[in-house]
Structure formats: structure tokens, C-alpha cells
Length: 277
Image (tube, rainbow, N blue to C red; front, side):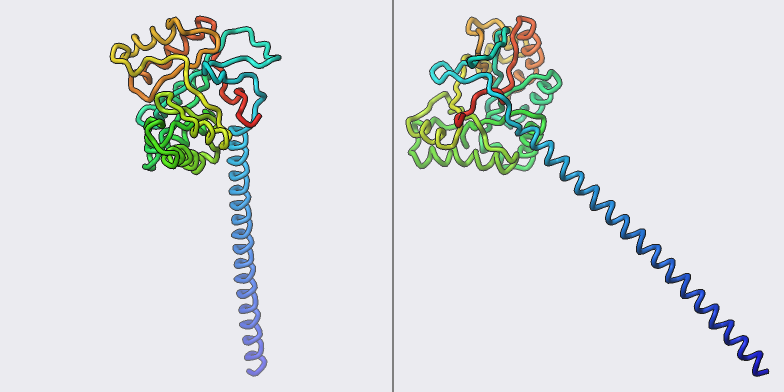
């Protein structure tokens, strides 16, 4: 009887040990699996961050300067040693990012055409427009400074001019991570103070050669296309001014196509000599 009791007790203890071992092993396996998953997840996150950092570096990558902006005429000039044989033009879009800038950028991107989008800070006071600006930047376009509220700088004090200009630089850099390299004063109206300030900020002053999309008779796709590609001011180095407008958005593919049909190359603004160079 006693032997039977001892035997049963030993069997129960052995079963309990096996059960505990199985549980421990299962728990260990689960814990190991969880650790591997966490490790893989962290690795994926690190790779994603690395890729995002690489994309940002690619966008901000400095290119060899091949052109410069003539400070007197605002036209694009080829630097010495630039053997580009085609006549060139620069595309610029003001009053971004209001309602149509993101779509204009999408169309230009599909056409492999570069441009500068000049930003007004008051458009960046809502999240939707900040996302639009980030989208434009992520497509590879350069962002310029067009002041905070689009006022004539000659009507403002030096303090107000400073707020109009530096405020936009900060807002753009907060959204894109890159400060504007170009400055365009509203109405092309610069002051001695604004020119001094943008020089300190390392920005290139840029007016334009011609533009028409604010005039009533050119506020349609066909009319605007015709004048932009047949203007008497269209010459090698022309700096084309357009705006965030519905008709400009509709006309953009035709404008790009017809400029190219006439033999013009649309330059990459990142190849324009910067103020600090």
C-alpha cells in the first residue's frame, strides 16, 4: 500500500514537472518570438527614417551652379563654362500655396519641368496649406519667399519689412526643413533695407521678365498659353512670372509643351548660383 502511494506520488510530481517545463518552454518561445518581432519592427523603423533622411538629402542636394540671376534685369544668365546651346527659361509661381499650387506642381512634375514656388506666409496659417507646401517641396521644387502678407515693402517700416520677410523664412523652414534661397518682393518693389536683409539671409533677389495672368483678357487657358509662349519678351534667359490661379493651372501643361516645342529648355532652379557662392 505504501509502495503504491509512493509510486503514485512520484508519478504526479513527474507530471507536474513536465507540465511546468512545457509551460516554461512555451513561455520562453513566446517571449523570444515577441523579442524578435520587436527587433524587426525597430529595424524597419530605423530603415524608414534612414530612407526619409536620404530623400530629404536628395531634395536639398546642392547642384553645380550653371546660371545666375542678372540683378538688373532678373533674367537668367549662363555662367562661364556652361555649354548649354538651347535658349533657357525659368518658371516661377507666386502666391503659393493658395488653392492651385499643389495641382500645378503635380502637372509640372509629370512633365519633368522645374519651377520656384514663391510663398506668402498668410497661406501657411492652416494645416491644409502646410501639407500642400510640403507636397510641393517633396516633389523636388524649390520654395521662395514672397513675404508674409503681400504688402508693398515701400509702405512699411524697417521693423515691419523684417517681420514680413523673416517670418516667411521661419514658416517655410518649419514645414520643409529648408530655408528659401530666393526672395521676390510683392509688385517687384524692393527697398534698400529689404535688399540688405535678404543679402544677410543669403537669398537671391528675383523679380521677373514678364507675366500676364493677372490681366483680365488673359484669364483663360488658351489666351494665357498664347501670350506666355508668344510674348515679344520671350528670349533666352526669360524669367516667367505666373500665379496660383485656376486659369494658370489649366494652361500650365500647354505652356510647358509649347515652350519646349519652340526649343526652350526649362532650367532647374537648383542650378542657379546662390547668394553665398
